[in-house]
Image (tube, rainbow, N blue to C red; front, side):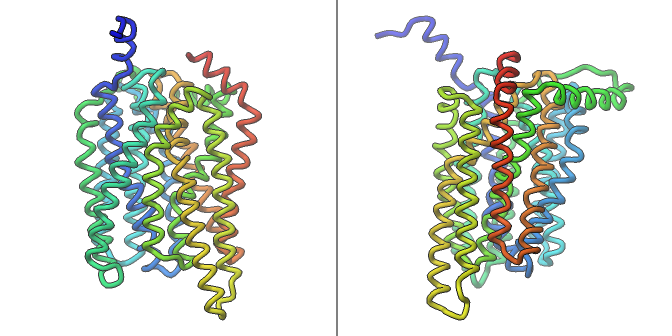
Length: 444
């Protein structure tokens, strides 16, 4: 049976445009940093060159995110002016790639953590403008699809292909003999991959929505716009409840991503086993990210976000049990201690699969759902506050982990404390669900 004109029109509208494809492809580019530097390879290496690697990494992550969070609203307000969004994106892209490369030069852990902090500022700053470009490249009807496809491409590219390339080189060189050299090469691969595959976005994505302001009024108008946006968020119950819930659950998500391998290394888990488990996370996340888009269309975005929050609570419980079983095992009994390590290794794999089912989905739907709640011409400004909520949240989680771990002397209690963040987020979503839905309908 041949297609009708209406069916052909719908199918054509559903196709991805060149700008949408280029925007999606940046996730392919920058996900290599999230995997190699933030999650899988570099935290393990850092734990070997610094005696208290997981704690220092946690505090370094907290500091870098706090700096970005403090700057995000101002950067977002400036980015909404005509021609500014792309310029600011390029600046932070350069900062991120350049200082990532410097991490391959230094051997002292003090200099390495400084390089990480500055490179993460570049990574997060570029992401602020990348996220806000979502309203420029697509429509509200396609936001969930484009956003989830972005995360899926990220898992396929930077999180899997580039990661496997880095891991393959490290294994060829020998993890025990040449770990430092292998990690440095993976850092160079990260830098080149990120920079080269950012080119499609730089060429094909433009700022379609913006506000006009004379240059001599830029500073005053920027401050006025920031205050106006802050007031709008506070007055609009739907946006406020969503942002408050987002603050807590994305904090937990980011903490799990950053601390997983450092936590496992502290417990004494096998390095290769953890890296392979995280590879499984990426592979599981590819179809699950796209699946979240279709399920959101059927059941609603907020229901899917809430489901992901509940699953993350379960992940934290499994993580606590994993660590507690190792810490409670008698170290003077080799057989019992080895059995505890083996069980912990299996639990790490279970955690990896669970994270893969929800990690991309909750991040993608949060980004696209927020895009539906805000005015497109002020997207960068609103995403600046979205970013500050996310980044200040990312300060709380690693800091909480570091404080609880150092106070109790138990990393297991540190990971258990993260579950509280998801519980608070779930309560906020339940309380504010009607207001959030009302704002979505009103903005449509």
